[in-house]
Image (cartoon, rainbow, N blue to C red; front, side, top):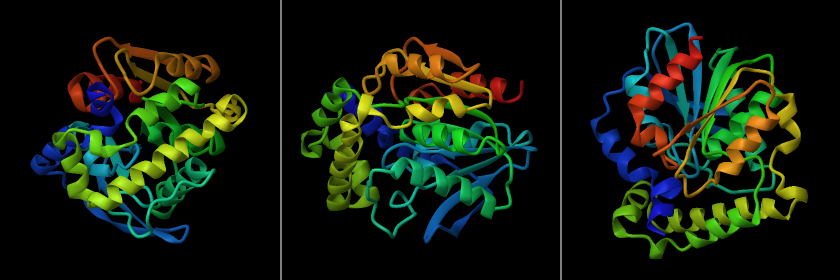
Amino acid sequence: MANLISGRAGLFRRAVRQTRMCGVCGQAGQRSVNGVNLFFQRSGDGQHTVLLLPGALGSAQTDFAPQLEQLDKRRFTLVAFDPRGYGRSRPPDRDFPPDFFHRDAKDAVDLMQALGLRRFSLLGWSDGGITALIAAALNPALIQKMVVWGSNAYVSQEDVQIYQSIRDVSSWSERMRRPMEEMYGAQYFRETWERWVDGISRFAQNPQGNICREVLPLISCPTLIVHGAKDPMVPSFHAEYLQQNIRGSRLHVMPEAKHNLHLRYPTEFNTLLQEFLTE
């Protein structure tokens, strides 16, 4: 249980500490997109624009502090956003209709267009990786390159068991629970996490547990899939499936990494990322 929570659910413990130290400068604000006000952070002035998409209950700063701080801002313009109902993109409260990944993908792309950023690369972690897959597939002319990690195109029964095992946040350690409660309040965090578990588990009822299997062949941008070999939240067969079904994609495995590999090993991850984006 502790290992599972330290993955997707434990993202805040390390990242909130990094947030307090982070001196990210640049533009921050909200933009009205598809009927909601989406919060975003923008830094750097490089020619290569990169959109960072956070995971479940994640936000720009909590999920990507090491990337916002350390990536080369002379080469890259970095944009990170809080999906609707997460972080500072509230209201509205977060919900999880059957198309919530497609809705997030449209929000993300439309935000970039509203900011006047017509062509860009995608960095997607966990749920944000799923969103990135859909965005890249449905908007091939807009997407330059893509990196995803901790992501899946379908939900298996094994996955559902993992999600259900961490449904009850009262079973989490206080160390893991407190940062999320500080961000969201105890009730909103508990109820939203339960809704997320229900929402992601519901995909298992689809044929082959489908989230976005059918759009993977539409992805035409160069794609790097990164996987932590010790990821307790997303078994390795998901990364292998993505590599097999995204034309020309590459799979890079980090042997000691878990779900939050970009937070735990930021130097290694950022180096890998920049080398791929600048090829």
